[in-house]
Length: 175
Length: 128
Length: 188
Image 1: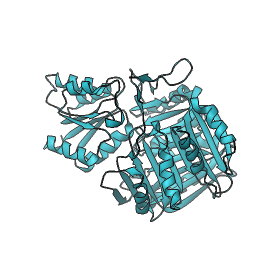
Image 2 (image 1 turned 180 degrees about the vertical axis):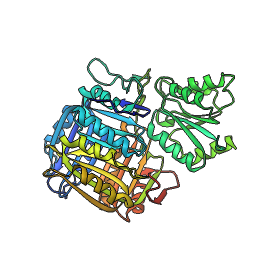
Image 3 (image 1 turned 45 degrees about the vertical axis):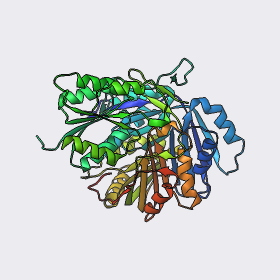
Image 4 (image 1 turned 90 degrees about the vertical axis):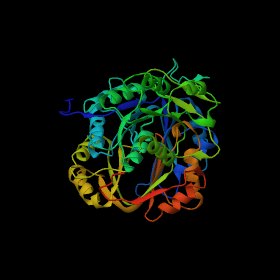
């Protein structure tokens, strides 16, 4: 890939720990997939690290990410028949790439989509926040995605990461 | 050089940095942003701020260390430092203890989550 | 129970729960335009090319998101000022809408409410509290995102104030609620 002629300076990229992606979709917009997913996760005290919900046309769709350690439990809960007409799909190992600040700029948004699209890394979901563009891609390809973005943006040499233990789970330091 | 006072906002939550800067700019301040302690020093050396709003829990260099470095540096010790102390009553202890906070040399301590209007009043008091 | 981590080049985290979730306050933006683009996933780079080429003064976004259909298609959303909607959607249509199943549509006007709090990504139940409060009162949600420390909810035009008061029943907010109508000159 050719480097972009004038790279846009940005403050940084953060990479998440390993996450599990859940997608619920229904062919009827009257089925509230968003509430269904949020309710199940809240009842089981599982943090949602990222969520998008939309209703394109007559459809209803929600995409959520939780820590990878909840993979089996969440899958079981959703496949056990939770009483709503929605089709669950899963991606077992994804990660969150957070690019900041986006400055509400269409240039920055467009170039990040161009970079990731050309690199071939999948974008399972994306959402903006006040200052951050967050992309969900394969966990194993986070560094590849980072490299692709560096073709267009002037970024610090190393992304910010959350520490991982040998088994891939997030290390936590109790005090 | 603008007459507006320059406030440096340092926090590893980019959304909070943005929210504070938007509020400061609406109150006629200029802003600079940093997302860790090392970047904070880079911004300070680029242009000396009138006041620094500094988070405690940050990667690379935490807020207490940056605060003490500022206050022990003859060139920068007069910069006002407002320290955003960690998570208040919800977190009873962290690797950054409140004892650390008491020994830090900040001009003001504000517990998180902050009230932006209250923060603006404090900033105005110190920069007027 | 509190857990935290901090290290060189590593992000800090805190995991905890509050009975009444604190926020830094609600912000509402009224009379915005929601552009919805349906296209194949393999056309993401073309979409990016089209978006980065939009050369309109003051053009920006208040919210953007992408969702996959689960198949080979995706939906791209851009929430922007109403006076920019036709120029932006025409630009995107010219550049990307060439293939089967691709479309660009507008929902306008719509309102947006967004709010943030400390470490929202580290706590369970926050999205459920927000969406549950609105569902109970039958408030329709057109689009929603929980990303980083922010929650964004797009609702029908004229519903921003009602939504804010519903959410204020379950979230702790500072006294002031900032609300304004948006022109293209104020990006956020």
